[in-house]
Structures are given as C-alpha cells and as structure tokens.
Image (cartoon, rainbow, N blue to C red; front, side, top):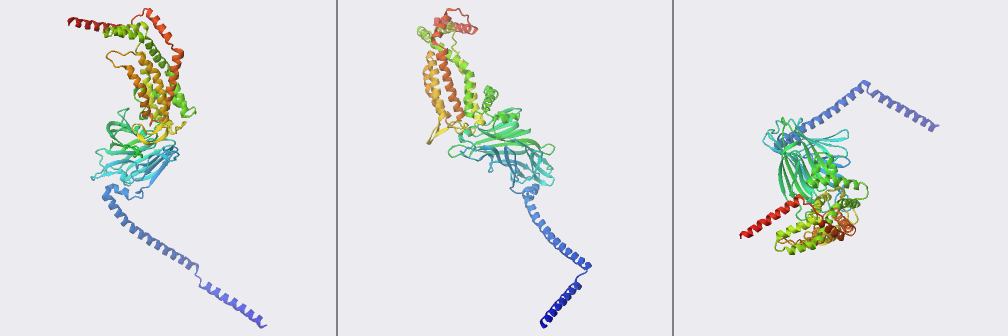
Length: 629
C-alpha cells in the first residue's frame, strides 16, 4: 500500500510541477504587441548592420577607383576610361559558324584566332585544323592622334565587347571608350556558312578627344603560317595582292622582299597559296603602302612561317567621325568561292594574264569542275581532263607532223639546191622558195601549230597549282596531288632538285624524252642547215636530252597533279603521233602528192610574190655593187 501511495504522490507532484512551469512560461510570454515590437527592433538592427557594411564598401571603392583612374588617365588621357572598365582584360569572344571560327580579343579588338573548319594542316594523319591566325601572328592597329598630343595604339588598349544576334547572324560589337558615350567601335557580323564577314569601323563623340584634322593610320599585319607539305612550294605562291583604281590589280614579288604603293585601293589580300585573308572596303582607301618580307631562306630551318605581310592605309574623317564599312574574308583560295562574291576576288588567283587567264577561267576551270563532279576521284579526273585536252589539240598535232613529213620528203632536193648554189646564197634562197611553192609546202606550217599550243601549255602550268580541290587528295602513291609525290627521302640535298625523289616527274621526263625523240629528231632531219646560221639539227639533238633533265629537276618539288598531267599528256601525244605516222600520214603518198603538185601551175600568193620581188631586188642591187667594184 505504501509503494502505491508513493507512486501516486509522485505522479501528483510531477503533474503539479509541470503545471506550475507551464503557467510561469505563459505568464512570462510577451504580448502580441510586445512580439511585434521585438521583431521590428531586430529588423532595424539588421538594416543598420547592412547599411554600415555597404557604407564601408562604398567608402573604400572611390579611393581605389580614383587611384586607378588617375594612373590610366596619366597614361592614356581620355581613353584611360577604357582601362577602368571590367572588360579591361585579355578575354576573347568567339563567333563561329559551320565553316569558320573566329576569336576576337578585348585587347586591341582584333581577331586573334581564325580557324578554317573542315581542313587539316599538312602533317600526315594530323588533325590540326588550318589556322590562318593563331598565337599572335596577326594584328590590326589604328594610331590615334589625340588632342592632348598623344599617339595611342588601339592594339594596346581594351575594348568593351557585346555579343548579340540579328536573325541567324552573330554580331560582335567592341567599343574602345573615352567616356560613356565616346568611343571607337569595331563591329563584326558573321553569317551562316560564310567565309566572308562584315566589318565596320566607326567613331562617336571623339571630336574633342581625337585630332580629326588628318586621317588616322591603320596597319594590318599578318605573319603567314605554313599549312602545306612543301614550305618552299607553298612560299612560291604566297603573295600580297591588291586591287586599285577601279579594277586594276597587282601583287608584290613572291620571290623576294618587296614594297609598293597604290591609290584608291578597294581590297588587300594576304594570299597563302591555298588559303587567303582579304580586307575589302566600300570606301576606297585613298592611298596604301604594302610590304612583303620573305621568311624562308632555308627550308630545312624556316619551316613555320612563309611571309610577313604589312599593309598601311589611312582612315579619313567625315564631319568629325569615322565611318567605314568593310569585309574580312578568311578561307580557301578557291576560284569558284572567290568568283561568286562578284568583287573581282578571282584576280587573287594566279591563273595567268591575257589569253592564258581567259583560257583557265572560261574553259579549263569549268571543264575540270564538271569532270571532277562525276565522283571518279581527282586523279582519274586529271587523266580524263588530259585525254580531252589532247583530243581537242590533236588536229594541231596532225598539222605539225604533216608539215614535218613534207619537209623530210623534200630534204634531198633542198640538199641539192644547197650544193648547186653554195656560192650564191640569194639564188639558193630563191630556188628553195620556188621549190616550196611548187610542192605546196609551207616551211612555217610546222612552227605555227607549236605556237598555238603554247597558250594551252602555259595556262595549264598556271592552273594546277591554283586548284584548291587537289589539296590532300590522294592518287596511287601520291598522298597529296597539290604537293610533290615523294617515294624516297634522300639523306642529303641535291642543288635545284631537293632531298626527295618524286615519281611522277620521272615518268613525265621519260615520256617527254620519247616524244621529243619522235618529233624533234624528224624535224632536225627535215631542216637542212642554212649558211651563216647555227646548225639547228645539233641544237635539237641536245634538247632531246636536256629538256627531260630540266623537267625532272623543275617538277620534283612541284605539285604532283601537274606532273601527272604532263606524264599522261605526253603518253597520249606519243600514241597520237604513232597513229598519224603509221596509219594516216605515209611518206610515199606525201612524195607522190608533192611530185603531182610540181606539175600543176600554181598562182603565186601576194606574200610569195612580195618575197620573190624583194629577193630579186636584193640580188640586182648586189650585182650592181659588184659591177661597180
């Protein structure tokens, strides 16, 4: 009973103590009014702390900014404002489409990386993209002459970038600020699937900051990277090209350091053989200075860069402001792409002058483009193209061989005349001309076909190094038809030949040897030596051996596509000559025809009559002089 009573008492005590505690807590709890007052006080205390912290920060910032502003202004004058902005860093902004990636730096506001997408550098199995600009190899600079007698360079100052879009176009605006509403602006606009981008330079509110009484000097510089297999071959076609005075174009000598000037310049191109950078302007540059420095003295050592290009142009103020609408092009030096812009950019391609360029532009490029579009591979396309050219030129080959055959048939009779009139050169010449006339043979007929082939030969020589489509396209053992087809690397260098052996030039040299053996040999036999003149027969025999050797040395480091063309061309020409010689032109028939012609009365042409009269007059004068003596 006692334990139960204790337990009950304990329970009652616990309940009482708990009740007392609850009552005490309740009685000491703040009223709703007191609670509100407390919360209000806590909020005020919190705000006071925040204000105190903020005031401390604000108080410290003006001191730091004022120091920075003073230093920047002392160095840059009004443009010191740009150095105090958050954008005053070396940060870059990338704009990119399907074919081109560009990175533009806040410092200088110019392109510091231009990557042409979809193309690799020359190294075998390399996945390095072709970069026209990288690692500070290019710059764009405007010298600002300020009203406080400073000369500042934009490449050393910081622009504020802003990236936006206009439809599908990416727009990057960079402003070099002298104040909130005073700036020099670069504006880049990159469109989808385009190598060409819009570029504008304008100024706002700088009339009191920059001296606008004279033009500003803009300098564009590029140290061109090597992108192809052969640095010497690439350097041969790396050159500065410019257009001036309403459509005229010119270039700097690619073989040596050179400089030039021009007026009313509409574009400047830094061409790197198969890629190019171009600056175009709607407002022509009144004057321009160009400079090209060759950086390849030794191709064993100088393997990174090819040329250092510099262009200097003036930017003129109009009503106290700059406003130039321009374009940049970074991409392949491909005729079809450049020609489509309809801005004379096809002149950047070294396709030859006059008739040579005309043949390439309007005949060879369209024909080769059609053949290569068949999808048969570029090696087979070159072979098919060569066959087509030789078929078209076969009538000329026929005329040339026919003339040689006629001269060969007449050779015994001409030798008789030479012996008969050896003491009277004038009479010998007259009788020889009579023989040609009676036989119906034109001694110049063999030369004219050869001269007709020269434009085609030279045009093709210019065409193949300019065919971008051959770049890194393989055929048989050649891994790149735009470069040499090495089959053996030599441990030494042969002067004028190189340190490798290319096979297509060897095959082309063998083919041209047999071709010249067939044609030049007959021509040498058919052309009797003339008194007082060098023996052409001996010279031609020397050329039979000298020409293949010259071709071997010259083409060893050239593009294998060109060597492949000449190899196939000479093979086809040999075949055509064999067909003509064995099945079409027979010497016995030619001899019979000549004898028949001699029996016919043939009226002298005006040219023949004139030549005969001149010879007769000369002979009469000579006889008169001898009589006086």
